[in-house]
Image (tube, rainbow, N blue to C red; front, side):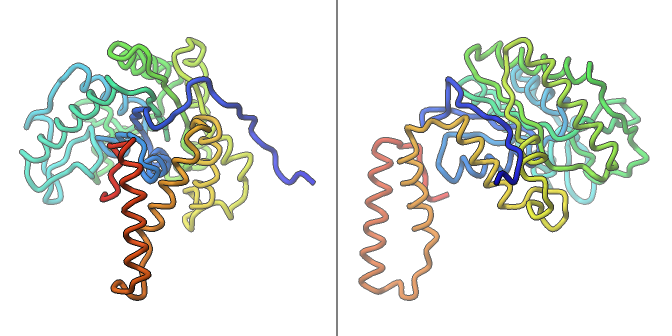
Length: 316
């Protein structure tokens, strides 16, 4: 008996392995997938500007990074006892103006460095509802709890999204012609915009992405469709009924892995998983002989892996 419809998937020609370098950008769903890559000790850089929800914010980060257009004091503002920047998530904000500017420019530098050496760039788009600051008409990445009356809210048209994504791809390819660019649409629902408005937003995103795919410069992974069609039950949502829960994230990760991660490194991933679980183990008696043997064996496993993969750091 078949109890669900399944999104057809097939293995790609250039899968990710432990030699791959990845840059992950976008909405909070990319954070979920990014945590999986980090857990298994892949070489990744994830959201140097924090979570970015819409394509214009990602395009601006890429453009400033590649153009080496650094931030100055003029690009930040003070609110709620912290310095903020409209181009970045509040994770980068600081009590010090100079520190925020430094955080922003460090983020640009990290982004550029990773784009240049990346084998894969994964971009997850969440919404195309954007807020433009009335004073400048500039679309922002994050409102930082500035009163809503200071913004005009609008939905990006399909043609605007296509232009933004094409520019993002062109800029990335200008410094790294061989990189594989993977687009996904976040299954997280932005219900604050409204139920119908959320669906309209996702429809604009899907239409624009598939228009861009015609050029052959990027590919698509159907995380949104897997959530909507294979996991179409509220038991796969968190308590807020908006975000995928741990079970759903794990399921979509396994689907992504089946397509994009090389089968040849499965034994290494299993070894990393074993080490991670060992590091999280809490013994009843740390001084016991049994635990001392366990610790020595665990350190031996780590040393063995690090001989071949020196970038693997199990201390963070």
